Image 1 (cartoon, each protein chain N blue to C red):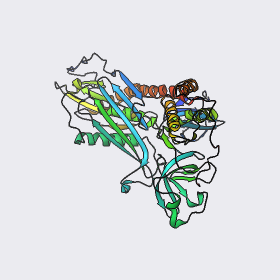
Image 2 (image 1 turned 90 degrees about the vertical axis):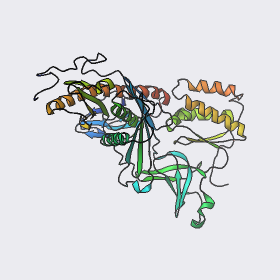
Image 3 (image 1 turned 30 degrees about the horizontal axis):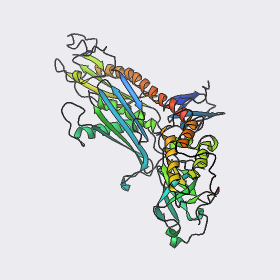
Image 4 (image 1 turned 180 degrees about the horizontal axis):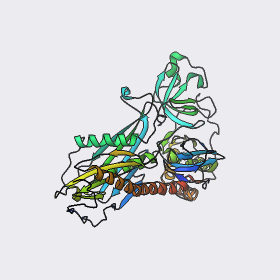
Length: 240
Length: 255
C-alpha cells in the first residue's frame, strides 16, 4: 500500500490508505485515506506521514537560523522582519547581556540587522533568541537575499558548498534559512566575489554538478581555493 | 419545450458543427506552466486555445490596514484583470464592474479549498491577469490560480479545476470560445462557467448567463465535471514536472 519514497503530491491527492497511518504536517485524514494538504515531497517515517513543501514562501521551523531587521521595539523586546508571514519576537531575556528597558534602542535600534535562532513557532508568531554563539547583531559586511528554497543548495551537503566559498574568499558567511546571507570579509572586493558566487548558485539551483561549476567560477575570479585561510572561526556577535 | 437537451428532441439545433471542428465534449488544447514569475511566492500560467491567464500568489503576509485583519484566520484576496491588449478593442485598465465581480467569485471559489487558519492576521494575495482572451477567462484564471496557490505552498484541502460549458442554440458544448459565445441564431448562446474541486467533486463556482432548462443545466454540469477531469490532469502534470527539476536542485537534501 505504501508508495515509493520521495513521491510528489499535489493538494487533495491520497498519499496512503489505512487507519494505522498518522497524518503530520501538510497532510490530513479523510475517512481511511491520508491526503496531501500541500504541494511537496512525501516523507514517510514509520506510520507518520508528512508533506515537505518544495516551493513557496519561507515557513520558519524551530532551530532555524534566520537573518532579519528590527522593525519595532516593544516594552519587553524587539520585532524582527525576516520575510515570513508574521514578524519574529526577540525578548530582552533572550539577548546575551542585560538590557535596560528604558534604553533598548541602545542595544538594537530600528533598521539594524540581526542573526537569530528560531526558538518557538506558533500560529500567532515566532519567538527567537540570540543567546547562543554565532548569533547577534550584524555589524559590517553585506547581506545577500536569495529564495528560501535555494538555501539548501548554497549550504551544500553538510555545509560543503559554503565551505568552498569561505575558503576561496576568506569571508565569514552566515546563511539564514529565510534566504538572507551575511557576508563579512577583509575587504569589499572579496565580499562582492562571495556575493557573485552565491548568486551564481542561486541562479543555477537546478543544475547537476554545481560544485564543479562553482570551482571553475572561483578560478575565473582569480581566486585560489587552497591559499586563503579563513578569518576568525568564531563569530560571537552581539557584543563588541 | 420540455425534455430538450443536446440530443435535440423536436426541432433541430442550428449549431451542429463547432466552428473549430471540435467534438461537443472536447476542450481546446491546454498548456499549464508553473513558476512563471520569479519574484512571487507562487505563480502559474494556464492557456486554453486563445485564452491565457497568469496567476501570481504573494503571502501569507501581514494584512494592512489593520482593521481588516482577522485574528481567527488569514484571508484571501483575489484580483482579476484583463490586460488592455487582451482583446481587439482596447480594454480600459483598472477595476471595472466586471473585473470586480469576477475577482469576488474567484475569491469565493478558492476560499472553499484553502485553509489559512494557521496564519491569523495575514493575507494571501492572488493576482490574475489575462494577457490574451478568447472567452473563458475566469475559468482559465481559476485554473492558473489553483496551481499558483499550490506552488506557493498554501495549505489546500484539494485542487480546483474550472471549465465553461455553453448551450449554443440547442447544443451543449464544453470550453466555449468567443465565436460560439457570440452565436445569435435560434436560442442564442448560454454561458455556464463552473469550477469543481478535485477530491470531493463539489461545485465551487457556478454562474449562468442566458436561458436554459433544468434538464439541460443538469446535463451541462455533468459535461463540465467530466471536462474538469482533463483540466485537473494538466494542472497536476504541470506541478509534478517542476518538482522533478526541483528534486535535482535540492540534491538529495531537504528530504
